[in-house]
Image (cartoon, rainbow, N blue to C red; front, side, top):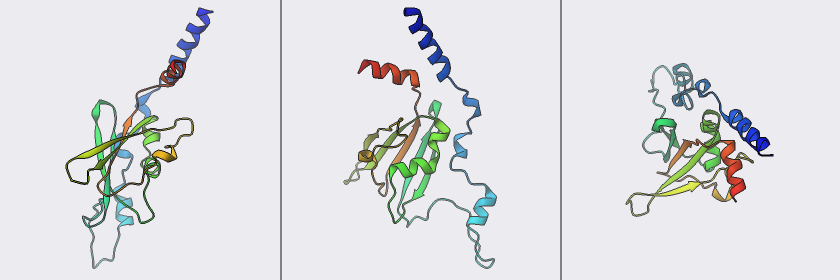
Length: 164
């Protein structure tokens, strides 16, 4: 009986290891080619416009940060929309799940007195593949939403559920 358990755990370990060399670099997640940017931001010939992809300074915005392994990080300033921007929507738009596979999410919200940030850990439901509705907060101006690569595996989930 112990041999069966050992073989099951061993096969689970081999099944959860993957090849990370096939994932694109972090910069490609929000990347827009120069041709796409030129086409998207094209104006009349008499009024040239820069190809800056960050929102103008007077537009309310927030920062999305993607952190991979080895603390490599890329930050993107994104504008807030009129209809509301929520964590789940930003997660889908950023393609962080496709890039990382598993993510940890943190929301850093500015304090009202301007003295730093509140750190809010956001759980992610791997079974439903969504942020639970009670934690799907609306993004406010000045927020920092950080998606980090989660190094845990299916085996960690199985061992965690046994310990509960």
